[in-house]
Amino acid sequence: MKTLRATLSALLILALVVTSLPVMASVDASDRALISTQSVLASDEAGAERQRISDVLARADVQQALVSQGVDPVEVQARVAALSDSEAKEMAQRLDELPAGASGVVGALFAVFIILLITDILGLTDVYPFTR
Amino acid sequence: MLLESTYQNITPRIELVDVPFFAQSDYQCGPASLAMVLNHQGVDIRMETLIREVYLPGREGSLQPEMLASVRRHDLIPYVIRPTLDALLRHLDANEPVVVMQNLALPVYPLWHYAVAIGYDLSNERMLLRSGELERHSLAFSRFDATWARSERWGFVVKAPGELPVDVSARGALNAISAFEALNGAGAALPSWQALVERYPESGLAWFALGNAFYAEGESGSARHAFDAATRADPELGAAWLNLGLLLALDNESQASQAALRRAARLEGPWQARASELLND
Image (cartoon, each protein chain N blue to C red):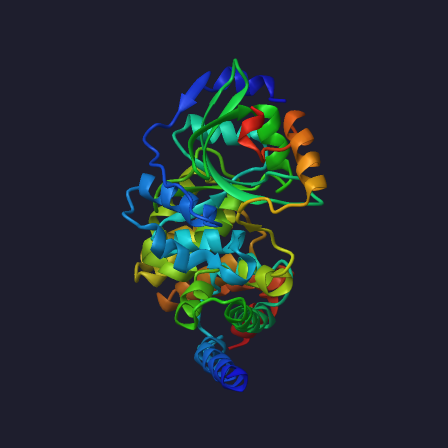
């Protein structure tokens, strides 16, 4: 089962990368093409073409990472397509560090409960509604 | 905590009562917050759809870039706000609910959370949120700001194409509209570029972006006008001279085209080589 999944995700990644390739190939298809707004906004950091290629690779990385984090492969391409180039890059570089808004129940060690209870009463946190 | 000018310039008390409430079920504060601001903008959308778009099972939560991306998928534009309490209140005063990210607990033991700011009361120094299972969560400015500061005061508003938030920098708007355009096309972004040059006529990049959108829509006359305006607003913007030169060449105005390309070739930057090449053709 595990190898099936590994094979499937490898195939999926390949498919996603291949479908992204036309974007790379179309860079400067015509030397009369206008300079795009997106490449000017991105140009602060690197040359436009190098930028474009690294953007495509970043998107492939993010797709792979999202699938491994449990996102339905059917959904993943549309999710990554909706990211801007800089967002895709941020996701590719620091997916594990980005905060995930969730706010489930504070699981908990009694010590943590007491500390948060005190900080709540002091007005520094907002965990337990009954403190107000 | 707030600037004196904020007290003078905004309504003392605001509550955006027409922002609908969606209660979160476990870990779904991201989709719930999105549902509130999208429905407030007239997008009829259910939580289940948004969960598919932003929820990350491996992290049991939703990430900021995906929250913004989801807005674009519903033909609206997300604008990240300036990270100050003054800016947040200005948006609320202008009928713009704000999705905010908070850390409800402490940096060492984070409890990341999205909520929607819907109002404030200046004299009592209280914020109003739609948050989690609370339709109307009232809390002190100080407590709210302590939790919000831990996300570096991250938040965003949602606008339809053609409308700009009450408070946005030219660069912030450029990034937001450009990301929307990359997904939804130049035609969809065009009204926002027009609004941006009205708000910031001195921004060469805004005119440049408008020119590209016009050109992509087949309106090359308007595009030429916009690139020309871009070079007047910012004579150092090589890409604008280059695009202007290319359009002039298409119109067989070769002398004017060469002049524009020469300007582009003289400016240092990523497009200098390209401009020189075109000159030698």
